[in-house]
Figure 1 (cartoon, helix red, strand yellow):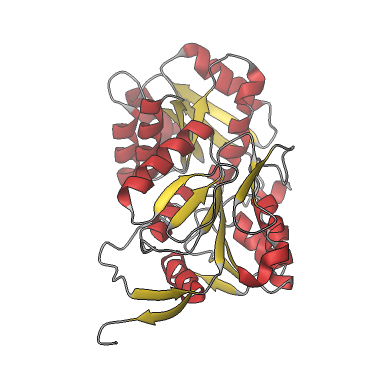
Figure 2: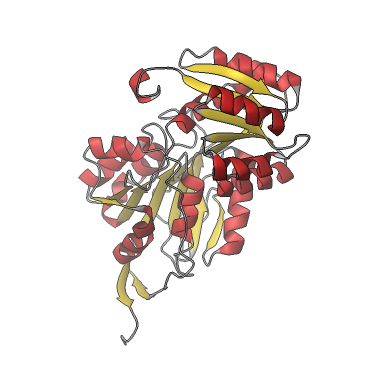
Length: 353
C-alpha cells in the first residue's frame, strides 16, 4: 500500500544516486524513476559533488557506491552518519572484497546493501526498488549495538526446544546482537535473513569467527545439534526442517511472501513440532513470517517479536503483532536472554551452585 511506503505526507521517496560510473547512474535513475513512489532528485559522480547535492535536495534515501574518486564510499558514509544522518543503501560490486566492504558499511550505519549485477540487464536491477522503499522507512536512531560487557550466565540442560529466527532490513546487526550473547552450547538455531548470496556468505564467515557457537550456511541433511546456528543460503532455496525434526532441508520452490528464502516457509515447516519451538521475528520491511508465526503460536510455540523502538524497519514485527501472532514483544537487547530462558532447563547466575 502507498500509505506504508510513501512519506507521511504522501509525497514520493526522494532519492539521490552517487556513483562514479555514468552508465550505472543512468541505470539506477531509470530503474528507480519508473516506480511512481520514488523520485530521483539528483545524481552525483563523487562524494564532494554529492555533499552539495544532498544539502540542496534534502533526500529521503541515498544510494552510494563504494569505490569512487576523491573520497571512498565508506569514508563518506561515516561522515554523513555523523553530520547529517540519512538512510543509505550501499550499491556494491558483488565480490568477496565488495561483500566485506558492504558489511562494514552496515556497521557504519547503512540501512541495506545491493549487489551490482554482473550484467547490464535492467531486470537484474529491479531488486533495488524494494530495498530503497525499505530504507525510506528506516529509523536511524535504532542501531543494533551489542553490549560488550554482557555477562554470560551458565545455561544448563538444553530442554529440547529449537530456535527459528526471521529478519530482513536491519537484520544483520540485529542478528549479531543476538548471536554474540549465545553460549557455545546454544540451542539448535535456524535463521532466514533476506540478503543476497555472496553478502550473506561473508556475513556468516564473519560471525562464525567472532562468536561462540558454530555458525554456518545451511545444507540439506545437516543435523540440528546444540552449539550450531544454521543460516539459509541466499537466493535459490527455502530453508525448512526435516520431517523427523533431526535435520534441515533446502527446498527449491518459487518465492513465498515475496522472498526466497522465506521466513514463512521456515516457520510453516515447524508446525508439526510447534510445542518444541521458540520463533522470533526481527526488524524488516513487509510481512514475511507473520502468517507462519501466527500458525506456530496457535500450535503452542513460544513467539517473540522485536519492538518498534529497537527496529530499523518495523514492518515484519508489526504485521505479526497485528495477526496476534506474538506472545512477547521485546527490545532487541532482551531477545537473546528470552530465547535462552525458554530453551534451557536452568540458568545458574553468580553465587548459585
